[in-house]
Length: 129
Image (cartoon, rainbow, N blue to C red; front, side):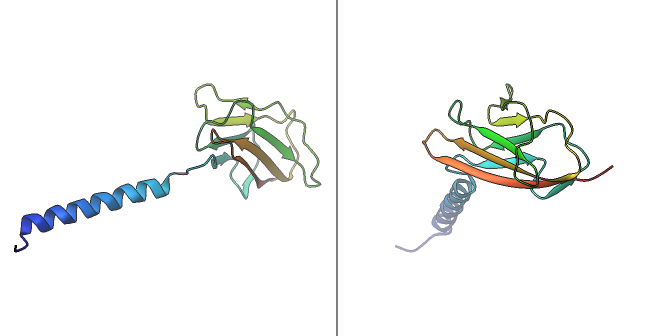
């Protein structure tokens, strides 16, 4: 049987479609993960009303913790963690008072629906006015 142009096009289309599916799957996190933050890691800001984190999926209820730490690693007084009612993958805390110029660490923890606990840290600097 001799290959035809139609058969070649069909095979090429199938190969390209499979590659697109694989690329989409590879770009999607399989586990609970941090995908965005405000402030961002290594950012310099002049002020911030809150620390907000977005995750790849809604975590198990009650498993997200967010702590704001000063340069000595001491906790900065802040509100309890709040889940965004309009975005179930977003969580935030607000400092009790505007923190002074310094470098801060955000330490976070959460658990996805697969039971895996994920932790991380990010740092940002508050610049003087």
